[in-house]
Length: 242
Image 1: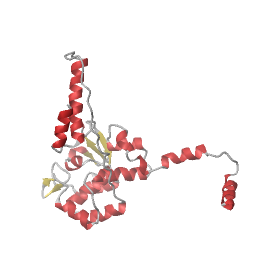
Image 2: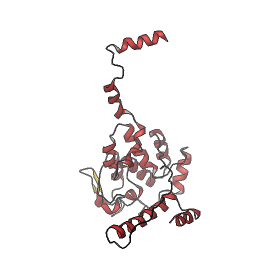
Image 3: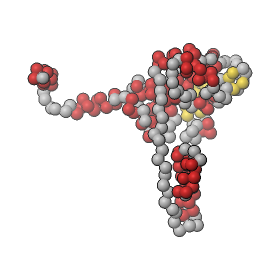
Image 4: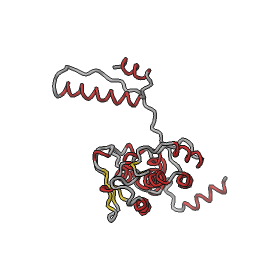
């Protein structure tokens, strides 16, 4: 297995891909050992170190600049992604039968979700407005271009729009990072964000925790540090002594 990993790395395969295959092989062998008793033991596996996942997000001002530069069909999709946090495939594949405009909800079916669990997505007023712009354009799909479903988003039009907006190293999936980052900065609890984003584990959400300290502020005040009655007088004495 080590030789196999080394060979794949020489071919330029990413460590994450190699580790995914390794985990699959390990799961099969573990089943053969514990449940089926086909083998007496399983070998040890060495996982390859993986780089930390990239988190790239933009400010609201940058987002406005970008949206102004995008062609209309991509602009609508980008706004919807920024409002819902949905992955690209869920946006490009969104069908009218997945929407309830009266209840302001979109449904992502289990077979369309990364975690293979159904997701109910609350829709903001802005998201609803974007959807209403698309009414009557296509019988099945919400977001279309020239009467066809949009399949690609990272096109020359996207790259040129980013360039004109003076935004570098920004991919379509970074719209989801931006949505999550804005939520955390606005005070949305991580467990709520996890449910909104359809993440299976809390670890996937904790990568955004560094963007805010509001959830820690109350604990700092509760701790108080030095337990002195008149803390304002203490601060004054420090000021004068300095």
